[in-house]
Image 1: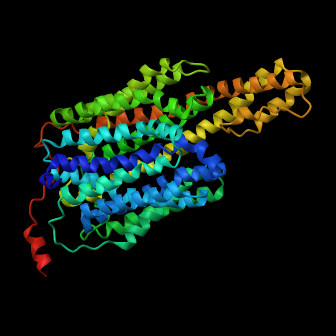
Image 2: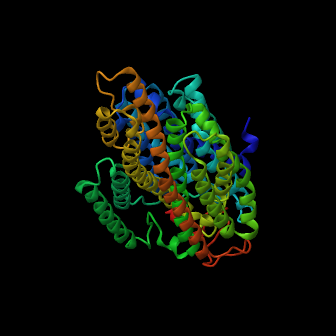
Length: 543
């Protein structure tokens, strides 16, 4: 029944957006389920963190490879394979019986996402002409902006009314629909050309990204010891080896064509993409903890409080994409990043122990408006001058760098949050201990000094055996106050780091050349769709 839409660009866009939506939703939906996962599977904190990180790590490592495979094996084929792997892995995650199984299947989910995600951007760049690409990227950007914000909302509803397993089962009907649409709507490749895969380059790039992502993710947990720094150094060495290897293959079929970076916009917009991904993680990581652990909101209510972010992003994504067609994305991006940073700063100013949720609505909506101005113009500008034959490689590089930004945000913001929280809890405990009998003050302060920034530190308020009931109640009440005020003290610097990174992205926009119409193409790279194979390609295919 969908065959009449076969090859229709807008139907293709809807199909791609649905697949893209699944992968981005899983980046945030799991965070809201952490308490339930730990209780139901009897998982340690370290195991729970790996449930979250396994998906991101594998996704970051394999994105460049997935993009290149799309160029070589057909973008539709890789998109369909990615959707199938992701959907089956989601079923396995929902059926997992212990933490080890869940971690393993989350990694398989990352494989599926890495196969399908790069194809979305490159197929859009191929099926839409340059003068209409901004509107299409606006839809794509709306999906990118809203999916992350919807994760806590949808996850909270599913957990409240069903169970944590349904945050994975919800992907099953969606995946089946996307596979059906892919088979009937997206046309297959028309390029019967044989390509080489470049195994050495894939191994070097994947190994470098794995060492970098793993080192950044696990650095704080292992106190940045020698082997963590060794992994980061090894990542730099492997990356240097990858560049040397790719340099010698530029006249053949490189995994990362250096010609992409001759376009100044491609280079700087990719940096902006890193800052945007940093901002997303840096925003949701402290805010979700604040809403649940300080204000005491349920998973569902926490998600609903964050709804203005999704609404603001949805409102602005479409107009931002359309404006990018007319005037270019430079100043739209800059304005969005400035509004995003301003919204985060305003949110921190309003946040306190006992803050009514209504006080957070306006700053969160401003944050969403800013985020909505970034995704579509960023996608338009980064792919504007990319030749169609390199669109898969370009999309893989772009998405890989964005995932590195997410991993970097988790490491940096997490380290700042934990470091500041540890000292803030101790300072607040000392201030509050004066209202307790002298015999119990040291135990009260010592419990928070040993808490090591645990988000449940308020439960460790140091109540020894034999404490009178009235004193024990007082210590528990003080523990809640200490944690709440301590977390608010620590959240400010952590969020300010994200705001500063977003401001750096806004400054980078100054180096972007302003687009003045569909004909702009400073490096004379082809931007039209590949309607037929070239003569050289036909000769190669005939041989």
